[in-house]
Structure formats: C-alpha cells, structure tokens
Length: 579
Ligand code: ATP
Ligand code: MG
Image: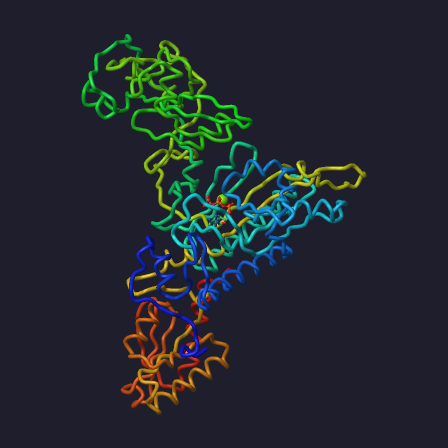
C-alpha cells in the first residue's frame, strides 16, 4: 500500500474528549472517527487491526472445534419475552419497531436467538455437543459510553455458545473455550489474568473473566502472589476473620454532639477505627415492584460490596436508599443509625462485625453513640454474610497470604449457563434411552474492539502506538527521506516491492511530506519496523532499520534488508506464538 493513496488521516492535536491513551491514539493515528457517543467509524488502518484480532479469534475458535455462524442483529421481541429478558434487560437494550408496530431489539447478546436455532435443529444426543460462534456488532445503550471503543454502544464481539448433553460435557466445552481464550489473548500480546467472577443472583453458575492489566481499567483484579488465587473485586473474598478474644464490656451511651462520620467518631471518642461499625441502607428490589429496605453493618473503615449484598439477598438490584426513605422507615435521624434497637429495615451483618466485640455504633438518636455494642447481646447476631469489598493487603481466602490488586480491562468472559435458557425456550434432546432432556449451555464472549484498545493501553509510548506484530495494521513502513530523489525512489520502490513479494505486510510512505512528519506518523501509527531510505546511508549502499518498540536502529546493506527483516519478524512472531 502506498500512503499517498491511503486514507490514514493522523492528528497532531490531542483530541479533547479522549481521556485514556488508547482512545486518544486510535483517533490520532487515524484508526477511527467518532460518529456519535459510543459509535465509531473504523478507517482502513483500524479495520485492518480489527480484522487481525478477529482472525486470531477465528483460528482459535476453529481449533477448539467451534462452528462459525451469523445470527441476526435485529431480533424479535417475542424471543426475549419467552425468557423474560425483554423486561429484565432494561434500558441498555436498543429497541425498535417495524412498520407494522412489531417490536425488535438490536442484539446486545444472542442467547435467545442461538437457543431458538438449536431447539429447532437439534433433537438427538447424536447432534451434541456443538459450539456455535460468530463475530459481529453488538448493541448496548450504555449509561456512560466512554473511553472510545472500550465502552461503546456499538462494538464488535465474538460470542460463542456451547450445547451439551450433561454437566460433564458442559465443563469440557467450558474448559475448551477457556483455553482458546488464553491462546487468543497471548497471541494478541496482552498481559492478562484469568479471574473468578460474579455470576449474579441466579447462583450455581461458574464464570471467569479475562482481564488485561492496565491502569485505565474500569475493573479491579485482586490476586494472591503466593497461591495464584485471582478474582474480580466484585467477587473477591478474603480469609474469614478470627473471632475476637475480647471480653464483652458493658454497653455505654455516649453524647457525641455533631459527630456524623466514622472519622469524626474516631477522633471524638477517641477509639480505634477497628472498633467502629457503620450501617449502610439499601433499597433492594426483587421484581414485580417488590422492594425492601436493608441495613448492612460493616466495620467503619470497610467498603460494602454491592454485588455481594445483592447476591446475599437474592435481589435483582440494590441501590443506596436516600435520607428520607431511611428516616421514614426507621424513625432514626440520618447519620445516627445503628444496629441496636433498629426498626423498619432488614439487618444483615458482615462476617467481621459478627466475629468482633465491643463496637462503637450509632444510637439511632441524634448526637448519641453507643460503645461496646455486641452481636447477640445488644443487637441480632445474624444473618451473617461476607459483604465487604476486599482489596490489597487482605488475607487470601485460600492460603492467607497478603493479596495484591490492580486495575484491569475485562476483554473476555466465559460462563456456564446450565439449563437457564434451554428450559425457558424448551431446547431439549432425546438421550440414548429416548428420554427428553434439557440441553446444558455455556456462553463465551470476547470484546474484539475492546481488545484492540487494551493492546494499545499496554503498548504505547509518548510518540504513539507500539503494536505487537500479530495485530499491527502493517508490519513495516518504508520511508524514503525524499521520495522525489531518483536514487531514493528507486531503492524505496524496490524494497517495497520485494518485501511485498516476500509476504511482508508493508506500506510505502511515498507522500510529499517532510521526513520529520513521516517519521512522526510512523511512530504514531506504530508499525513494528521502519526502513529509512536516506541519502547518507544510501551513498554507502545501506538503509536503516528501526525497531519501533526499542527505537534501536541498525544500518544494513540494501540487498540484506529483506532477509534481515523476515528474520526479525519471525522472531517477533515466535514470542507471541502459542504452539
Ligand atoms: P462490562 O462489565 O465491561 O460492561 P459485560 O460483562 O457486560 O462487560 P459481556 O456481556 O460479558 O460484557 O460481554 C462480553 C465481552 O464484550 C466483554 O468481556 C467485553 O470485552 C465486551 N464488551 C461488553 N460491553 C462492551 C462495550 N460497551 N463496549 C465494548 N466492549 C464491550
Ligand atoms: Mg462480562
């Protein structure tokens, strides 16, 4: 490809709306342009990168035995109504109606569609197992689309669905996808961790997320450096607290004028924060309009994990209750609530509070607190749940070592679904004895466009993107310093032709631009190698080969260039290989 004929408009200015490196660089390097919030056009360079990732995904899916299909993006509401998700999915689903007023959704995911296909085409145990996948646009009307393609409203996803006769088969299919995902992300050059993840209130399901480690990640990964335990912070547990050895002291009522926060309480009494407990009020909803006020008690310096709370309650959703709801139900002024004598809300204790002694808590009375409140004696001793957010320094639930945490980008997730969709939609098969049984399912997603962004988050510098060869839009750019100079033009054209013939993905920067502009663009777009054809080296019969990642430059005789470059590319590919 000749850049003079290519559409790769680079930007010198930093795009104002871009907050993270990948978003900024995808715009600046001319990979994409924004059309509307969370909706992008991909230009030729961006399209090539996406195709590279798609191809890696496709190869690994095929290798795992999955079959590629194309399911419709426009999906009839009736199918979603059959599983109950037409209501459940909420405002994230783009909905539309046709000219006859029939309702449709733009697919945010495809469990309904694919299960409908399987119920109509699979009837015998002989047809199972089967795993189907597709690589396609998905539509989600995210509350806050941001960070470019990281959280978009239209994005490319690879989604796969496995269908098995029994649990054992489902585990096998899951394992095959899990391993395929590891290969995909290794080949893309990502540093990632596979973590245990939350599976929602339905329970029983088994799921892992694939997290690319990056500062800009919206997720948090907690892991144990000793035994390898790793989990999404939403799911992460820690070793259970040891029961306190303290004796219960007598309950005291203490005047605390103006004290509203844990920090103020710690300073005022004074007391160590490990002996304070706070109560957090949530409105839990269970569907069908049923709501309940919940009071969760955690240690004063802990954060509550809302996902754990939701799961403990079996609720569809939880949200922080507002001041008025709390005062109305409990009669306690806001900010003074405590577990002793609390009315009007369902009380839940975090394990740590249940295991502790002599807590300082609110007295349910303005400007008063209680000291030495104890579970079982002064307030109910249960129900007890693991409710707190775990983080760096907390003891590992498996081995007790101090855990670490880092931000991560969820690039993929694998999920055992069991019979959730097959039962709702009646996807059954006849076993060897002719008995009808529900099919066991798994679902598996990779954010293709998010993976592109994650690679850039991990591989960039101040000058631009530093692509791994596996997903680079082109492997090499040939840059003649002055293309108008006949000697340079002759060598640049020849190298460009010979590299192409040798199967190297090469572009020739034949634009009528200053060399500085061309070098900057080469760094910004991030071609793994640059071949510079300049007057000085050429006088010696040489060209310069620069590696983007290290900026190391070497001079090579013109006639050795193609072979040398092929060697280096082969070595780079070997590093990313999974064979
Ligand atoms: P998130 O928690 O980040 O919203 P999710 O758990 O809802 O993602 P899944 O339903 O598991 O996403 O979708 C599979 C994959 O699709 C995710 O692992 C992610 O890589 C990608 N993905 C999901 N939502 C988006 C989005 N809005 N923009 C880009 N990629 C997305
Ligand atoms: Mg997910």
